Picture: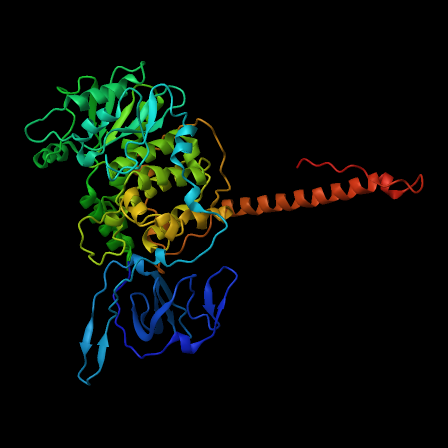
Length: 569
């Protein structure tokens, strides 16, 4: 959400201007503090410019361009403006201006993003974030495999489905040959596979893509039988519930392109519900409208009507409502659930991950949430490269869409309604979104697991979880109360949803930045004070124990008169 600016250039080099040093946080800085730099970050050029600020008018400054960021610092003493923008978040550069009547050239910046910085990043952390998610360990935590579900490596070379992970959990009674036949009837070969199993009633959440029914209403006996096998993994249920994330009219329209949905005629033991969540194009346009109403000006007099016109919160409501339905069906033990949209990598990921977050308290911890993102989004092939546009200069690409941002927004809405249920705080969610776009880490690069293996992402880049897990205290919610088996049912009503101001409007200087919650801040201070008292108490007790263990020098030795210290701590 950067404004257009006009720049005047005078060549000048940072390398000749200052002497560099390394700060305690590992970021290279020069002695004049011109620009911060990460390990592996190098300066490409720097120029004096005139920045046309949408809030304060023209500001003279110097812009530095590295292989990771665009950094502008004002040179005027009465303005402390700093812009620090990773190149990965720049969606468009427009050339502005031209030759003046006096023969001077005055052009705007013309920037072409270089190769992804993640492959040049040389940062070191004391935690390896790539070890956070191990699919075998995660399925074992869920009690899998068991008598009804097995782990298959049929996709270990990504031959069955190139956008699925190598390891899949499928019904025990389904053979690998059955899976191959089912794959021919599912879009992109994305067959129904298990995401989560309830620890008590054993109902499951299964994800996949749409069936290839087409206009002729094709059927596939193997696919029909396979869904029946999924239903029969739990003898207590009579029907399998299918949640199609799309509006019904869209599902019908998809028949024209060879897609479709599960009809009652073909799937006798299943019931189908449409969740009316719109496609990636609608979501992209909705977020554009949000951007337009928050930058550069927020018109207070028409704020509510402007916000309503974006329909952003309505979309958040529909996604949350769908996830609640999935979670409730599984938690109640009424039936197992199969979730899909068109290709099973956008709305499907939103619904399965949010439902799992509601059902399983493990995913509400910092590590658990990282595993949830790695599993349901990264491993199962959400198209991050296409949706975000990493390294792609085509800003008009129709594949761009804020699907993952929308998911994180839903998580933030839940955290507002359940302030003690999540181990992580708001800053945790914001830093994930910031680095979704920054290209500083390899976590969100490429569209699927097979592409990441080909590019050796885990060997050549740093994981975002390395940054977060090396300083977990910064991202912890002080009010977190660990509760096992508590299911969260957020209220998906427009009256209870709100725009995430600390994310969407944080860069606008005319909006007063939200200060840290005073209650939360005071609670953190009390926790720190408690820790200090406990430490001092332990030191006194150790000193006292040492005195009591010394042989008495006289009957009235002072050491014998020191009582054992006890407190309620």
